[in-house]
Each structure stands twice: as structure tokens, then as C-alpha cells.
Image (cartoon, one colour):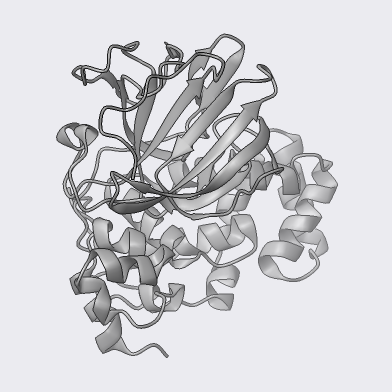
Length: 368
């Protein structure tokens, strides 16, 4: 069993700003925050599940994740869905989101109703279906009394599954939703979606790089070849920020404030032509990925401000599917977009689409 003193220390120390780097890279956290110095080992799901303030409803959220994806949540995922529940997202809504995920559809989407019910029993209950239960669930799906998502929800909350996967907060009474999470996190008004499009440049469609986005702030790019990003309606708040006096188009780049604990996926489909690290403002370590989009050969989609980059040169990436980094990079200074987001501010992902044939004026600040 995890040491409860360590668990409570994690709860006490970690705001989202610290948690982002602590979960994804404790070495990076050591460089940016003193609180993370006390975290010697990665935070685990088992530690999260033992936090004092969790309730039986949180345990149900964890088990739903377990049922839908046939694995327990990682620590970042567990904290993310606790926060969703505490902001009044009900179990049915969470189940609907799980059911619409690419991972769920790839596992269950192409199956017949019979195959679906049989696989639910094997994956969720770790056994073959008994004749009576199989007939009942099959009838629900065939008669459209229940959707497949509703079947998963009911099986995932069944006493048998709960008994197979007990959690420390089982039986703890739930409480009304509140502005801040049970984990002591200051809430941000972020929006859940499935990496939906937010803009385009000619034939190139740009997708949001995370499932949890707080704000999109457009601004002028430093590069003279950056093209104007045309808007696509999205659930995420969008704004064009005050000019930076760069004498370029107003929406040449997008700063996208994203949840600190969640992976970053490619905003376009194409091929990675460059990827690596650089020093921002001659002082801060950062990572970049440059993608040549399939729809516009010769152009470049630049993605900046990430931690634990996974994409490398030559990789084929698919918009909204391919993971290119573990999360956003949170710098120890306030960015322009931070003036319009919650506190403590999250990291943001920078995206721009550049025509490299356009000559770029040298930066007035010079290089490092």
C-alpha cells in the first residue's frame, strides 16, 4: 500500500501548474518549481486512489475508465476525470465521452452485436457470458433499448465489476459539485472535445492538439511566411490578441491553452520533417515539431512548447490521432494568453502554418 503521508504531501503540494511537470517529467519540475523537489518518485494511480477527499462516485469514475479501456487509469488520467466529475460532469456524460473515443471505437466499433456482448464480458468481467446475461444484453442492443455505451456503463457499474476492482473510496458519500476539485485544484473552464478542427489555411485543416482546451488566442507570427488562419466554429473560446507590432497577419499563429496532464497530438496529417529542442528567448528549454502537411506539400506546420517530445523526423502523423509529446511546456513567466485564462495558468501549444518560400526578415533581437 502507498504511504499515506506521501499521498497527502502530493495533494498538499500539487496545483495543476506543478502537477503538469511532476507527472510528466520530474527532472523538468525540479528546474522550474521548488515544490517538486519533494517528489522523489512518479505519482501513481494507487496513490491518487488513496487521497482522503475522494468519494464513492470518484471510485465509479475510475472503474468506468477501467471498464471501457480494459486497464486502470494512469495518474494523470485519474486526476483529470476526478476534476471533470467535480465540475458536475455526471457518470453518463463521462461514459458518453469514453464511448465516443477512438480507442473504444477501434476495439468495439466493427463487431456484430453478439461479438460486442461477448467481448464486453471478457474484457470487463474477465469471463465468458452466462446464457441468461448474454441474452439480456443482446436483446437490449438489438431492440435499441440501450446503446453500446449504455451497456458498458451498466456493466462497468455492476456489483460484480466493483467487487473485482475495489477502491479505497468505495462507500464514501458523494457531495455536491463545487468550483474546485477534491484534489485541491483551481478549476479552469476548459472544454472537452475529440481533437476537433479549429481553423484552416487553404486545404490544410488544423485540429486542436488536446482533448481539453481552455482558450485559443491568435496573434501575429514572428515569421513573415506565416499564413492567416481562417476560423472554424468550435466549442472552445476564441480570441485575437492585441497586436505584437510584428507587421504580420493578425491570425498567423495560435496559442492554445491546454490541460497540463494530457498528451499532445498532431494538429495535421503529414510527415515530420524536423523535430528537436531549442532555447526560447535564449533562456528556456523548449521542444518543436515541424510537419509537412499532406494537403500542402512544401509548406510547414510548426508546433512549439511541448514536454517529452516523442515525434521524430520521418514520422508519419495523423491529425488528432498521433501523439507527438507528453504534454505542454509551462514556462516560469506569464505569456500573453495567460491574461485570459484561469489561475494558475496552464501551458499552451503554439501552432502556425508557414510558407517557407517567403523570405523572413531577421529578428530584431538577434540569435542566441
